[in-house]
Length: 323
Ligand code: ACO
Image (cartoon, rainbow, N blue to C red; front, side):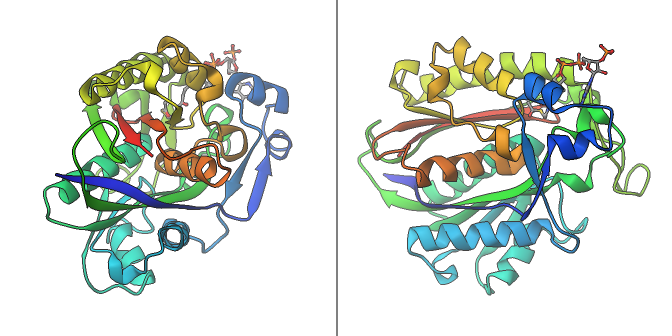
């Protein structure tokens, strides 16, 4: 039985750091307000001329190095992003070119903050059916380019970055002790478009537009939807919350992370937190958090990981992964 296994992780953050105090110097906000309401202390911002594909390509190179692979070994690239360099082509094909590849299949998925869970699920399906053998799954975003920097209710929440994994099909027995993606579950519900969206695009204003959000209402849906899909994916894998070693969540807000873990009876210490230093990097946040906890040695062989995310649409999803 084929199962997809994560054999390497990598991430990349732009050099420029913007602190809460930097923001307070130009907006009616404060370090205290931002930390208390969100847990965010700073975020990275892409340089002029540095695009989503640059961030994603660098994260991909680091994941390839960690996996001991070269671009020649890859036959599939799936990129989760809501901030492509251009409306088209897909960022995945730009990254394919930047990695020097002319073979394989490369495409983007658009599910905003849940994008990495969607990309992982799609890649897992293409690997386990035998259509492909080894994938790069990348979350890369430059949300700084979608922000209304005059709007304190959204400008303080987001940052830029990218994370990547190498996902490889391996023959396994098919038990819950096997390494790899044990189960994943996705959801979407378009009724809530108006709670979180960008007010631009080719079909509306013709310009890129700005992110708009009703934060309080998004928060309420996030905790309910995330705890529900996390329970669902554990059921699907034949596992229970007590089996989970680490939650690797989308990093939107520290209070969402803690409330969601608590609903499942998990200890806040089991949640990998990067929102303090990265802010919300949308589709990049799950692979960024994963890479952080792999490289600092928290995640160990045999650990059960629960990946989860929710974002605009709404979209939400979770995956159970044995490390
Ligand atoms: N600095 C200072 N004051 C602010 C700021 C700011 N940056 N932003 C808002 N305020 C003010 C508001 O104007 C409001 O003032 P008022 O009471 O005079 O009207 C007050 O602070 C409280 O605002 P609320 O919106 O009620 O604050 P809340 O506690 O809900 O926190 C936040 C807002 C942080 C946006 C929160 O609702 C949240 O994190 N929601 C989740 C949204 C999210 O993370 N979305 C990302 C994508 S989806 C996902 O990833 C899950």
